[in-house]
Image: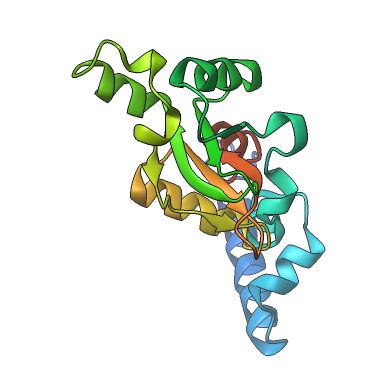
Length: 179
């Protein structure tokens, strides 16, 4: 019998069929030993698929969109680089191009309270030394978890030799449905 007072509109029967369909799907899932990776492979464009397949290299900003500045440049110059790339952070490199630090707009705000002349200082004097980094081959969801745990908006992506090859921004994770 349906919930409709005239017993015409299928309400109870559709709910029962939905429950039976779910039970059948779960039974088949267990019998065929269907794993989350199988689901991701069959549904790569969905949220679950993206969380299981999308890697940092697929979403990181690279090339001209990856803010990088030499450690001898000033904070003012770093801000120009950050503004040009529309990110609140920049990787800081030494003469060989290797990552030596990271500077964020949050670093600037904290330092500005103590030192009004910060804009003319060399970036290496105010950057975060030995910053947390990620590699391009980890899953984007792992990068997102780390960023949430550490309360980072951005994180530099390095290669095996410590060269900054990209940056992941929290907004990119949001737009991909990872967060």
